[in-house]
Amino acid sequence: MRILVTGGAGYIGSHTVLELLENNYEVVVVDNLSNSQEESLRRVTKITNKSLDFHEFDLRDENRLNELFSATKIDGVIHFAGLKAVGESVLEPLNYYSNNLGSTLTLLKTMKKFGVHQLVFSSSCTVYGQPDAIQVSENTPIQPTSPYGQTKAMIEQILKDVSLSDKSWKITILRYFNPIGAHQSGKMGEDPNGIPNNLLPYTAQVAVGKLKFVSIFGNDYDTPDGTGVRDYIHVVDLAKGHIAALKHTPKTASLVIYNLGTGKGSSVLDVLAAFEKASGKKVPYVFAPRRPGDVSQLFANVDKAHKELNWQTEKDLLQACQDTWHWQSSNPNGYN
Image (cartoon, rainbow, N blue to C red; front, side, top):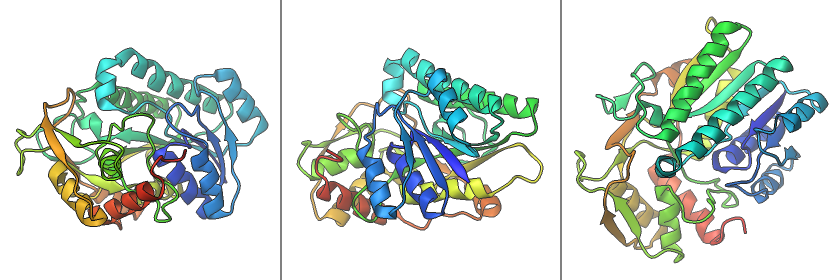
């Protein structure tokens, strides 16, 4: 079975590509490398000793995408491609709507044209916004508070409409919580361009001496220690969730939605304490004002994924911090 992975050179994408190859799928990757590097894929092939087919272009380029589908038989798609920083989306909403919605519409048109109907979509817990309950299930109403979250919610609605129009589609929406960690080999991890937007890669760069301190955005939330609480899931567990989604065929519905998380919340200070334990390094931090679009606390009810996908997380917060430190200390400049 040959799977197209859009955004496959990115953090979650590359780890998922590795799991696909380990599970004997053939893999085609499309990525414009705007926030990723081809070196991640070279390392995937070295770790697995298997090959993949990589194409560098923007997913909104309909002609290039049509050429790819014409030349290569694609059996299913995992769609990661898109911009993903909450704070940046508040500052650059038009860029986020253009990129995330445009790439998805082009992909869906091409899939329909070539009769490819299996899709796993990379959604996000940001679609829940600030819900009344702090632990959310797939039935919790969605009310995104940032343009990034809005793009995910809009794409989910597009996919629902597509599945209603044609029952031959088999669409799985995976709402991720907060991916962290790295491959246990230390050869793959999160390597954002410029200053990291996410907590753990930022913390790792402080520990390795590239940055001076961690800024904690908000210490006055209604949480046990005043800092934001999130559900941090190891990226390898998350990647394996995509394999489970590909293997699972819904019995009745043509579209299904699953939360992928641990079911547990950890505060920013919890994460810093775990990282200090994992690395043996002191991580200095300062408190800063809240960021626009952030919510106080959010973690997943993952009963549905456990039951229907036979999937659950295997790695805890400390393991994720250990793997992150192994990656960052072995690769202080990332993939460069």
